Each structure stands twice: as structure tokens, then as C-alpha cells.
Image 1 (cartoon, rainbow, N blue to C red):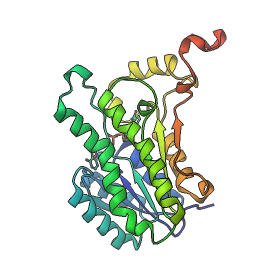
Image 2: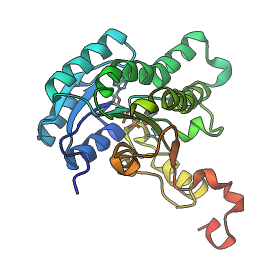
Image 3: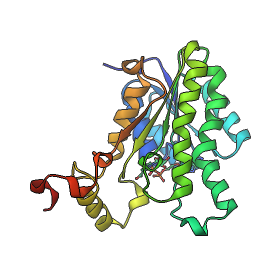
Image 4: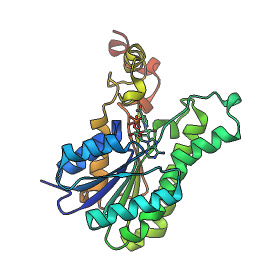
Length: 255
Ligand SMILES: NC(=O)c1ccc[n+]([C@@H]2O[C@H](COP(=O)([O-])OP(=O)(O)OC[C@H]3O[C@@H](n4cnc5c(N)ncnc54)[C@H](O)[C@@H]3O)[C@@H](O)[C@H]2O)c1
């Protein structure tokens, strides 16, 4: 069943990693997809790979003018907009006592305001139908895993979708967050040992995630299968939030 047949979707940060997998999944389920990214060359390469009316559009989610132009262009090229996926984002790893105001502003600007800007710009178009927005948060927005400015920004998304649900749910719109655990993308390149360690120590399901794990959850929330779900944060995290490794069963806790 093609859940997105006849639908148009825009994915930010679609040129690489999780965003790329989301774009591939939505296109694979029939959507016409706009790939909005800073890296236009990679977005264009993906658009030609996907075919089916996929369009690449240059977009910096930290620039309001850029976002409005990109969404306007995408709406024109796709002939509408039914699904927005706010995926562009990036942590920093800067320790709390080294993070000045400029650092906090940069992290909030990219990881929280980016989603605010894109949602605000897409709203008039989404309101023409029964559109929905899925934003990519993080387990960092739910529990304390460090990277505090990034985590605080991701936590903000969780309240944003609740307020937007109260305000626009009555007009047919839905807003949700998918909160990934560790996902194997280029951000982990060269850190195989760390990924193996995390798989053993943090993830009861004994592996880190793949971009396709997140794409599957996004596709569910963005589809009509989730038509009565709004304002939630769906963790997709191999069980990492279930409890510390010391509480896993003896049999499984160490190989
Ligand atoms: N990889 C993980 O372990 C992990 C875990 C939890 C959450 N996340 C979240 O998932 C999302 C995607 O992460 P990823 O690991 O796939 O990253 P990635 O670096 O592989 O891809 C990010 C994409 O976003 C684009 N981008 C960056 N800044 C942008 C901007 N200002 N405007 C538009 N596009 C921009 C990049 O060009 C790139 O195509 C992020 O929001 C990240 O915080 C990732």
C-alpha cells in the first residue's frame, strides 16, 4: 500500500543521513518529495536518484527568508504540501561550562528555531488540507545524555508539538516528534568502537539504530495510520530509555 500516493512532502536536511532515509521512504511510499538542504549538490543527486517528481531546493533552516523562499518554491514545484519533516539539526558536544551565549544561540537557532521557522512558513499551505508535521528530536531531549544546549533545544520541540496540537488540531493539523537514539550516520564516521560500546552498554536491543529505523517511524506518524495521534514524542531508541545496563537481565548483560 502506498500511504503517500498523491501527497507532497518536504524534508529538511534531506541530503544525508536520517533525512535522506526519510526522503527515500516517503518517496518509496508514493510521495512527491522536496529535498531541502544546505548541500544542494547532494540534494540534487538524490532527487535524480529518486525520480517521481522529487525536487531539490537549497535551504538554510537558520535563515527565515531562505526558509520562506524554499518552502514557496517547493509548494510551487510539488503543487502543494501535505507533510513537513523538520529533520535538519546537529549537536555540538561543547561542555556546559565552555558554552557561551553565542554557542547556546547557535544550537537553539538550528535545533529548535529551525523547526519553528519551517513550520510557520509551511502553515498556510498545510492548513489548505489536513497536513501534518514530524520533527526530529532526540533521546537527548528526554533524558540527560550530555550536550546540554542541543538537548535543551530538542526538549523544546516536545512542548512545541503539544501547543501546536492544541492550537491547530481543531483545524485538522497534526504535529509530532520522533526522538532517535544513536543512529549510524556520518556524524559517527570513524567511531566504530564507540558505536559497538554503546550497542552493548546503552541499548538493550544490542545495536545502534540505522537511518531506516527512524524513517519507518516518521512515515508512520506522517501517514493516515496515525490520524488520531498528535502532540506526542515517539522515542525510537532500541530500548535505551528503559533503564540502566545494570538492570538488564544477567544472561543478557555482558557478552
Ligand atoms: N545521528 C544520530 O545519532 C542522531 C541521534 C538523535 C537525533 N539526531 C537528529 O537527527 C537529525 C539528522 O541527523 P543526522 O545524523 O542524519 O545528520 P547528518 O549530518 O547526517 O545530516 C544532516 C543534514 O542536514 C543538513 N543541514 C545541516 N544544517 C542545515 C541547515 N542549517 N539547513 C538545512 N540543512 C542543514 C546537512 O547538509 C545534512 O544533509 C538531526 O536533527 C539530529 O539532531 C541524530
